[in-house]
Amino acid sequence: MLRTSLWFVFIAVGALFVANISITTLEPWGELQKLGLGLLTPDFLSLPGFWQALINTVSFALIGISLAIVFGWLLSLFFSLTPVRLFCGFIRAIHELFWAFIFMPIIGLNSLCGILAIAIPYAGVFAKVYAEIRQESDQRPAEALAPNTSRVSGFFYTTLPIIYGELKNYTSYRFECALRSSAILGFIGLPTIGYHLETAFREGMYSEAAALLYSFYLLIISIRFWAKPRLLVFACIGAVLLTSWDVSLSSANIIRFFTYDILPWPMRAEGYYTGTQAVTLPFAAIGAWLLEVMKTEALPGIWQTMVLTQIALVCTAVLTLMVFPFASRRFHSAGVTGTTQMLLVILRTTPEYILAYIFLILWGPSMLPAILAMSLHNGGILSSITAGNVNLLQLPFDSSTSRINRYLYEVLPRCYGQFLAFLFYRWEVIMRESAILGILGITTLGYYIDSAISSDHLDTALLLIVVTAMLNMVIDSLSQFLRRSLRISAHLKVELPTS
Image (tube, rainbow, N blue to C red; front, top):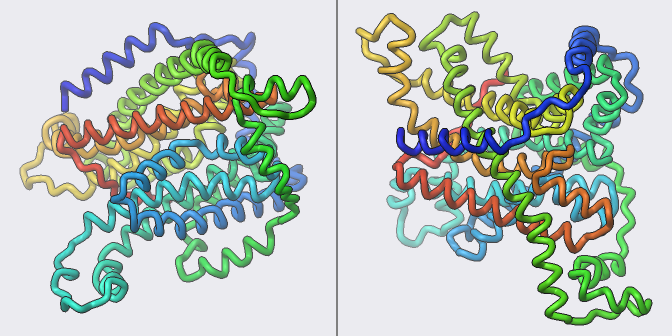
């Protein structure tokens, strides 16, 4: 494990030499002072449209996650089949913002676009995790059933009672993630709280932005009180009733998108210039187009995405190893751990995209805002999980009174393997976020995808999205390979504290 860790550190240090981490704003500290003042003086009275945006944020997340649970569970039943496993890996590898970009030309920028953008990738996530939870559950009760017992009855009376708690905890955690996804969808124009946040930050209205952020934190913290499984049906009905379904679907538009708009430009060029919309197959021109896109956009985007990913991954690891002792009862008093846990809740509640957007305003478009944003957010998540696992450790009665000795010789050796499993699990997530942060001006794959969509080059955008998904699937496969070779658990038990 140590050798693997050192290789990752070595790669990240090398990546720092080629990364653009410059500060380009003229007065970053002046802007930081304005932001700090805004955070101290939130203005809750100047938020037009706030309540509707908050309702939309919850509704998009609730309906999207409900659809994802249903379809994710169905897919999990067939997850052992290679085509199903690859399909789930592909749909979860595409970020919610990229899914929204795909649906916008088909159905427009509306509630259905946001809901589908959440539901599809989360269905892929649920399929994988639900299948793993079911496979790794205790099989002895099921093996004791009579031979003629139906599979449905056997599942509900033996397997489900065993895995229900884990399913509930993971689904609750993913609902929190869906709320964050719903919020950042507002940054591309959907009517969630992110739309108002983007406006407030862009126009320098930091007091209003602070009020929106604090409201979002309260929403996340309140999940434990109102997001109950027994209330899910009623909550979904309310979300459906409160959501605007003003969607104009055109079958002609859908057919045109899949049969014409996303085809490579050389296939459409002749029909475009003659006005016939005819499709041809000039193989040489298609090959030249593909080579040009890969050379000028895909490969540079992949390189920058991987550079950013590896730096952020190692920074996340370092931050987690430094912070989790302050959140664990094995090292500090309740006052210190409580304060640290509260700070970690804020870090993991704030989406990387929003953090990066804030840092971008302060320091300009470079990798520095993205590295810091992803390190803080993912470090907050991993610190909470690692501290919770350390709290479960049974230390010997003669455990060292020195915190540093206890950390280095008694705690870290016992929790490091599981920490690496969590970190490798977040690797593909960090890669997806690295790609999507290109929308903010960092030259990762998201930058080229956003540029292609802005230029109405849907063929190029779709190709780059597929490249992003394939890259993410490679990272996921490599992560699983490392977990198997190091013999560390790939099964994540997620119980994040909320206060």
